Image (cartoon, rainbow, N blue to C red; front, side, top):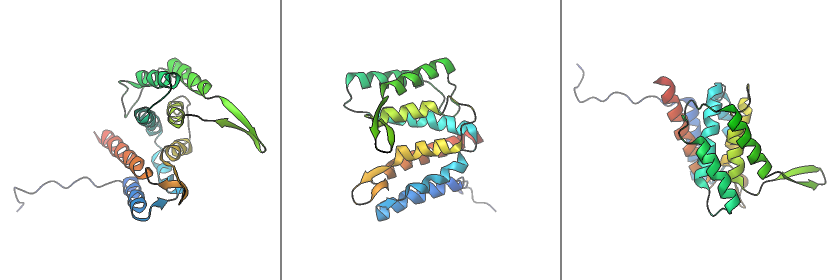
Length: 192
């Protein structure tokens, strides 16, 4: 006989959620984790529309994290914010022409290259603006590989700490927790 006070069982966390939460726990416990631990996301991104939703999510997170920008940079953030406003976070629909135009402006805004002995590199002066550019870029091309979304996750989560170098440490834990919330909400939206 079932008890009237018995609560329904909580939904079981997906394997990717469990692994992401383990990365956060490891960072909090030991201070650091390798960037390659985020490869767990590649399989999750094999569902193509998840890549598009992730691009919108990262662009919004980067816009939210901006602070103390020059008027020119702030204008780019405002334009991107207005473009993304009201867009469905699980199944975003991009007006292709407007998305390409915004992406082109974002690329052109930080299109300085510096010649080094092994070749030219693009100079990124505002990392969050580059994340917005990359997030929107995930929505522009058909058949984008899960690897591209994984790279954006790495770009979003990585942090340099002189004790550990460039990896998952310090603020990375909070950013991975944000991705955990995104994955959880996306999976819940799929089941609804």
